[in-house]
Image (cartoon, rainbow, N blue to C red; front, side):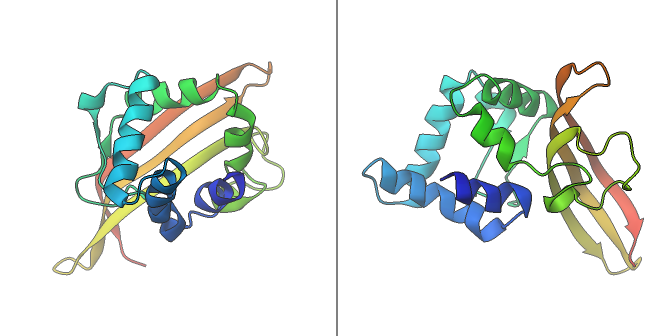
Length: 166
């Protein structure tokens, strides 16, 4: 499971994320994607997540019906940092300036290099009339260590921003 998690988190392997729900179902003796969503719902309830602030209909978070507030993401990150598997979860996250989808996000001399472990999420649509992308959502959530070695959780979202197509 930890290796699957690394594929999903470090390199954003979306097909792996979609297959996670049926794999969770099989682990519990169930059989379907929908059973996996039921298991995920139970997990979120156990984590104390406000289910009214969540809408999930796939594993990758790319469906038009997928929503989660920054506060909900923060609450989930806080919960994940306190469990028995917290180190496995944290090790699966990309490290800013080091590996995964954050490997080239800062230069080699950046003081932030190696101090942020976080997952990106991006959804965009093409606006053909204006030859541009509409950044539906760009998100970053995870953990960071301050210069005083204080550990913080964070979630930052930017939504509905037009950007010039490259």
